[in-house]
Image 1 (cartoon, rainbow, N blue to C red):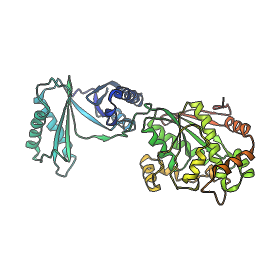
Image 2: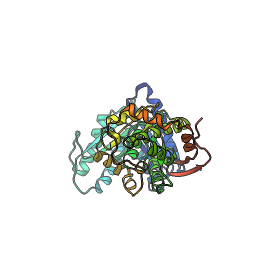
Image 3: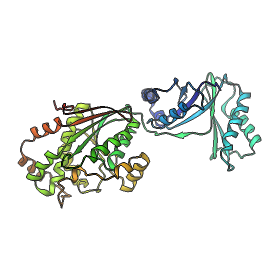
Length: 415
């Protein structure tokens, strides 16, 4: 292997099923890989035989390589990554020796005995030796040196070989990636992000479908503490690891809430809150060019999330509303939040904006006619909504770093 560089094999799974559109999706993934590795000594990024080969211009024992792998683990669309050893020129006699030595070195880190297999991918179909013969030759060398059993169907450890036109790659250990589709392959969406457990998980799930996610958060400061705003920023930083840039708009919702609490029936207060949240979110969506809204709703989880209330709330929206958690249990959502790294943030104490002026007995089966009548009695809300939007604050993040803040300068004023 060349001593001054390291090769990382990137495998994509779902993108390989895209047929004639595969080149588009792979192109987006390559662009995201290049962005993710910005600032590192990056060499070539080449596509071959369902893989992307990333070249890092530093020896494999340098910290830049570990950092590159850490960043690639967060890039959506990647099934797995592996640091590969390289043989220039594809000499099979050297491959048998070096691949065997590499396998035995990996094996020394695993004290237990195990079965193994050798799997060769031959991208260069003109190469005179076929994959089964390469598997047999290398496998025989490993078995003779190690005494391990071969198990083609369910091995404990696999030695992978990739035969390219100008070189051979081989590796054993693979690190799982995020899978899904690369961010930017689908439309931009706007997520209604609370400080709770559900909406961050919903946002991540939508990202894995290739959507770039912007965020809007409703708060009741100064009538509640600012904890929910600070925690939401922390959540955006976590989620920002999965896309190049994130926008967060913070909307002060308290004045609109107070009007609803004073003038509308108590039982449908929460339904009205959420209908006006959707209307305000659509103003933000227009500004950031989002094509849909995202919520963390799950049927029956709270009073506002019955099928009847969801239908009445959704009536206020004109954009599609995506609900990736709609049929998930709370236990499933918590499990995903722990893996994502948002659970500890979301379970810190905070005052949710919907908890401010919350009725004692919220309606679970609201009727649209009753809700529309209540909105008519509230009268025109255009000025109040415009004032609410004009007081919005904006935060922009590059990855996990906040790069810009704005407030009081009408960052998302409606047109």
